[in-house]
Length: 81
Length: 183
Image (cartoon, each protein chain N blue to C red):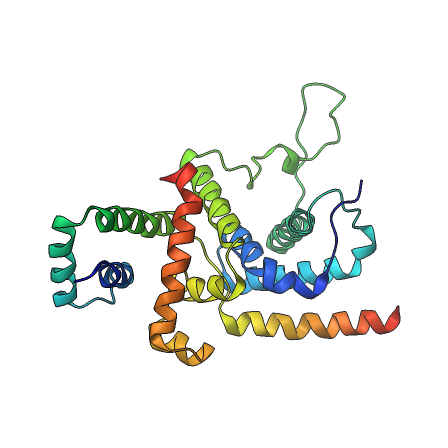
């Protein structure tokens, strides 16, 4: 497995999107590849930080609704000025 | 000194997630949080002329949002019962002040865990703010909202391999950005 693919599988693993076979191949690669081990370490840490932070964001639909209401008000205000 | 500009056209794209995250850690209800953020933008729009440029747009909007959250708690508290409780103060100077002023500030999170978490949340949002908008959008959908790859691809009309390239770039940039203080 080349490094590029290893990193890709590592990314997928963060979202539980990698297959078992992919994970096995990744782990074999990590045994002999220091650079990818570093990448995996940082990547895993990033996932853990996000979990710990419990950050939230708006879903796209809510954002669209928000934009619609806001743009209406913005338009109205621009006309008044 | 007025070195900060105001441009409401970009508010929702730039700040809605940050404000939402700020709100939801304080009101714990998605719908209410969303309404409060919406109200904040509308209130900001109305009082745009009061923006002096001393603080950044985001800080200015947060200060409006804080008022909105306080108002929200006032409202639900006054719905509970109209009784007012007056207590005796030790010195005459503070006489006439209300009990509410002496209870713990709900926004003053003293528990270290909470403090650290909100600092981490701030750090994450600061780093997200440095990503290109499209990259941030895909990354947030995948990482924070936890959407399936297919769902995101359909919604944004991109291919799966496209998505993974974006995710990879975003993750690398985020890890770099957070490295200094959080790794």
